[in-house]
Amino acid sequence: MATVTEIRTRPRDRAATITLYAILIAGLLVVVGPFVWMALASVKPESEIRQVPPTWLPETWTLDNFRELFTRLDFPLYFMNSALVAVLITAGNLLFCSLLGYALAKLDFPGRKALFLVVLGMLMVPGMVTFVPQFVLVSNLGLANSYAGLVLPFLAGPFGVFLMRQFLRSIPDELIEAARVDGAGEWRIFWRVVLPLCRPALATLGILTFLSSWNNFLWPLVVATTEDRYTLPVALALYSIGQNRTDFGLLLAGAVVVVLPVLIVFLVLQRHFLRGIATTGLK
Amino acid sequence: MPSVRAAETVTVLDVKPAAPPSASGPDPERRARRWRRAVTGWTFAAPFTVLFVVFMALPVLASLAMSVTDLRSTDLRNPFAVNFVGLDNYARLFGDELFVKAAVNTLIFVVIGVPLTMVVALAAASALNSGLIRFRAVFRVGFYLPVVTSIVAIAVVWRFLLDPDAGLIDNLLRVIGIDGPDWLGDTRTSLPSLIVMATWRNFGFLMVIFLAGLQGIPQDLYEAATLDGASRWQQFRNVTVPLLRPTLLFGAVITGIGFLQLFEEPFVMTQGGPLSSTLSVSYHIYNQFGFGNYGYAAAAGYVLFVAIVALSVLQFRLLGERD
Image 1 (cartoon, rainbow over the protein chains, first blue to last red):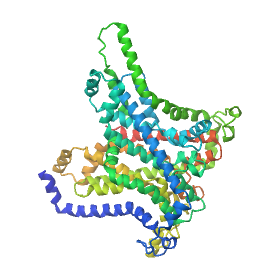
Image 2 (cartoon, chains in turn cyan, orange):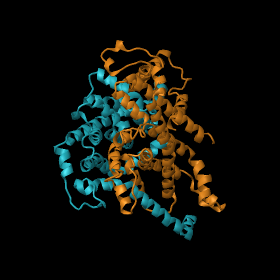
Image 3 (cartoon, rainbow over the protein chains, first blue to last red):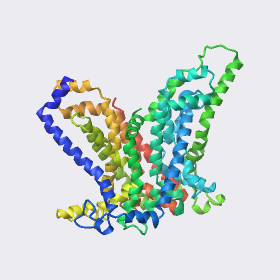
């Protein structure tokens, strides 16, 4: 400990500290700046957004952009679509991935190793490889442009299995054995013993799944063929390259609607995010 | 890489069967127990496995099958009109000027973007880990912010930031008397702009991973190095980088896989232009799908998949071996 304080107070290190702070704060401004600009611009009138020299704080505050999004355009519907799809996909992953994760970590059955390797292998396969046959499949099932079509291919994701299995392996077998000795059935053990112990992993998986579903773009873009099935990113992207393409204020307000819920969730639950990333990345 | 480690641990687990092999009970009883275990295991595994096989595993195989046919959107209701065309789609791909252009663009994006993101992430992680900085949590959360937000939303914001007439960046340049370029409208700056934006968005993710890796390096190694008179840079080169190698490898592979799939940014910001200077392989696949060329799109998808696997293997070779 003594050496650490010694190092800290060396004068060369004071200069280093100041330089580091300067660089890091500049970096922070560059990273956070665009978000602040987006939020402030979304409450400015169009003319002020395009003004030279640019204003930072709005001279005229207005909610017109949001009013237009929510009345002339169908953003409330897109918001509901995004939320519904994300909730269903999250619920599915929590259930199915913990079931399989438990089986892979704690149960011994033939084919377990092969199943795990196949699921893991799919982690590497990009959506770009699968979306064409997935679309053909979903169309032939009559589910194109439906909520089921939006949700089904994502209900069982390989990432969640990996996460849950890793977590469950750290739970001592004795807890499960004890319940088994007490005569509890396998399902009872899963619901009453295993799942409650998994709460931290389930929280991480839930947050990450909800987030990736909320932000997902390619699949809803392909499956949602009419406006009433658009999710927020699809609507925003298509408006931004369509007839509203030069409407800065409107599109920035749209971006705020997409980003704001996520930012709030992230800032409130950031521990879960960062811990989840660090553990899944390194274990 | 998780898959490798996980595979090892599975093997280790399997060496230790639940019942000791020497246990000699009546044979039918043991068989019944094994049968029960299999049924229980597969009952838990079944819901995921069914969904997974139908919606993920089969499409991967179907994609390969489609890529050797001339399947088009108009054939969906009439599967018998589809012909086997062998490797024609693949041959056509590499003769397709647009695909080659997209492949080159994607390669440039990856080859410059991944190292750039890694360097920025490692610099940020080292700075935060140096013990000189307070409020680490603030920087960590701030740098991570773009990672959690929708790429589409970010692309919309950046398209306006980079707008030559009304964008904030050129407006700020104008204030100090510089006539900024038309970032996204000029073939010389369009792809570099996307690379910088991707670095901006993704380095926070790697930073968090690198930070966790840095904290796993024993402090006494640095103390020993300091006693030996090693400068900070020498410590970084000879202690940090070698010990961080597995983490760096993981970061490079993950980032490489992500960057190879570049899609949303050109879709929203440039529509692949100007003059296809930002057309990516994924965007090309999506366009071909939109034109109804399903077999052709599937073949391009497989080429992308092979590129992802090849890049990962290459990075294992470059970063993984020297133990």
